[in-house]
Image (cartoon, rainbow, N blue to C red):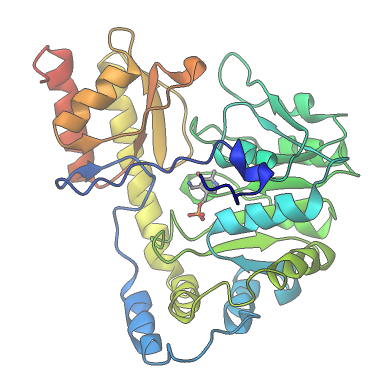
Amino acid sequence: MSRFLRKAYRSLEVYVPGEQPRDKKYIKLNTNESPFPPSPEVLEAVANEAGDLQLYSDPECTALRKTAAELYGLKPENIFCGNGSDEVLNFAFGAFCDETKGMAFPSISYGFYPVYGDLYGLDCAAIPLKDDFSVDPADYFGLDKNIVIANPNAPTGMLLTVPQIRSILDANRDNLVIIDEAYVDFGGKSCLPLIAEYDNLLVVQTFSKSRSLAGARLGFGFAQPEIIADLNRVKYSTNPYNINRCTLAAGEAALRSQAYYDRNCLTIIENRDYTTQALREMGFEVLPSKANFIFARHPQICGETLYRTLKDMGILVRHFSREEIAAFVRITIGSAEQMRALVNAIQTILAGGGN
Ligand code: PMP
């Protein structure tokens, strides 16, 4: 750390992304990426766009927002494009919270929320989950804080219904409610239709999961135009060309390849059902997931040992050392072949054969 670093960054506990090891080829089930490549149309669009990389990208993301607006039945003014949904979340924390208005979120959720909270010096409330690891909407009534909830939640995969979200919005008319729908396409129901009704709702989505574009970095914020204009104030104060040309082209083509991605989501749901059932048959508790990952624990093997043994066997899953969830591993749902390999490896480990 240099002596020049500003105070706010000195004690900050930064976000730790899932590991991306290069030492050998793993079956990678640790960062909730898609096992499927981008659609052929996306690959073609990126190749075509690359020839124009000497030119700046469109800061207004006009074509992408227009295509998205048509797909979702919204207006372009309802849509903000971010460099990954992480950027949308970052801008939202920066735009809408301050020393008088903090942020509330589930105590077990996406690890970036408390990092943004610290970065902006916010008074954050981490609200415990219920004993079954679900979010209780009533815990978010009357807090006088902005709220961010991942739905489905991560790393549990558990889903709130649209009426439950509505109850949080109704009880928080003077607070901004951010619903982070990173994993909504794997069996959840989006609350995008609520945007017309609620001026306190910001829905955040990503192209990193169901649309196979984690490496392109693209996310959306959806809200009433005033909220979108505020996010643009932050963007135009930091990085107006936040989305590069190839990613803009990839995003637009991805929206036009909806049928391809819908099929992939159905496959992930099938593979999730297979893996959940196979793990339950081996004695695991598997939380009911509507995401492209499952969260599971076994009475006879601790999460860390399972993670390490699987890694030695060439399969990467995610383990979190926080006490309340240390018994669990989070397993991204990949291809059928990858999930069969995982199930076989865990069978071997439980039979005492793991190295
Ligand atoms: N929200 C949640 C709940 C996530 O798990 C992630 C992915 N780690 C993100 C947002 C950010 O995704 P991205 O920046 O790739 O869009």
